Image (cartoon, rainbow over all chains, first blue to last red; front, top):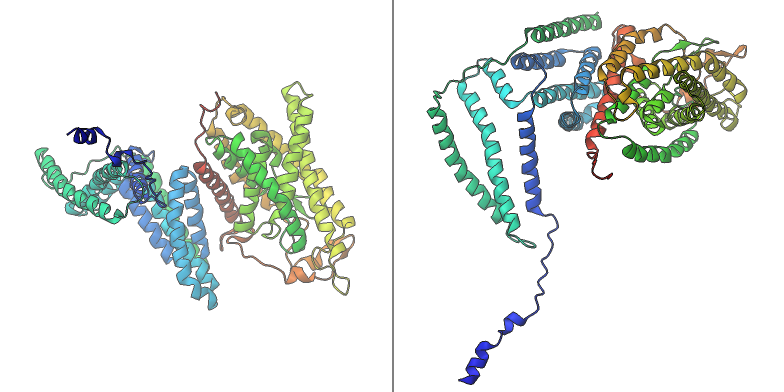
Length: 276
Length: 333
């Protein structure tokens, strides 16, 4: 009896063991990387949302103008026009801020490298001029679109598309997609953060954790889409997107139009000079 | 003063580039502490002034041309280290996009115009400005610094040209690279720079410096108003006026193409041959050679080149600023 009591009062052996668990530090910290990537996309979208463009030109005109210049660029057959466009784009780029410039150039450099690799045979087979010329054209086109997407917030892009009579269902899908990327991104981030705080050392089931998050995100997205749609219907949404016009400045539009006209005139002039 | 490729031997280029490496490293390190992230784009403006200054070619005695550099000007506005980087970037853009100044000779050109010029010009200004009480006196000091800076740079370029025939000749005694010895190159470079080009540098430096001081003192001193608009207007004015630089029709001394050097008359007789390496040396095709754009009229190409050059240097420094850390004001207390 006494013996039993004594044994009961004693601290169990497993409690007396020295704690010697040292978690293996994870080398690539997979979760942190994922979180950082998601955060950077969200931050960019939020920054874009807060960005109020100083550019008073109508978004639809800017989109049309960009497409038009790209068409002229691909039709042109002399270096002079490409040179002119590159000067204009450089000036436009010089007025962007550092973050925008970096993002535009990143895209453009990627495209240039890709086309350069494809065009290497042209340079080797004795057409170095074609190599330089086409790479320059690719660079200019991608830079032009990069500047457009970096200086036009996405809601203005949708409104621009609306004025081209794009069916509402496309705009609706695009609009909701943009919303969801932000909403679901935030949910993803919260779950990853929760997982990170509960984890010590190296996890052998990283992939499993991620599938769980993806599954929950999918379920959440279904829930959210229903809620969003209901909310929109409650507020009187009937499937049509009215074109809400921003205070467009006619002077800016006219200036932009004159600029486009000048570019067109120069295009024909330079083509004519090079042909003659 | 832009030394083209093949006028200097690769060994000379290598020595001068190696000499520039520690200078660049120190300048970058210093600029990071001296200049805040917000002021970084101003370096681009400085480089733009330098780029434009170098496009105004002036006719010099002897049928050649010369130009201002503006290195001392940037040193006065943002310090000599910033000037070193700004002029280097301007020279880089000129060499790469417009074929003005060689790719191999880039280090040599930087040594003359981005190292000797701004540091010496700024040093002399500091030395003299300490003794000057009035604002006018300081402007005089700036002018003297600019004059000394550009002439020292020209002298360095002349010496680099002049030592080539002493070191490198072929079996028949003909020079392989620059064919003119020191006795020809030094007077040829210095007469032009001691007179007209030196004067142009003084006027350019003093005029722009006093303009910036008056309209946008924040660019020079901390906690003062920085007005960007007048400075941009001045840049625009310079861009529009840039075709004036085309009026000087000659080629700058030491910047002839391989096809024209044989006919150049120096000291009463034409050279009569094309140095071997000049004819068959390294060649690099710039995108817009000699500031021409395709088949556009020369003056339009010149203006567009000026616009593109200014835009590129501004972009380079804006991107550089975006990589800098935010200046933490709490550290200093």
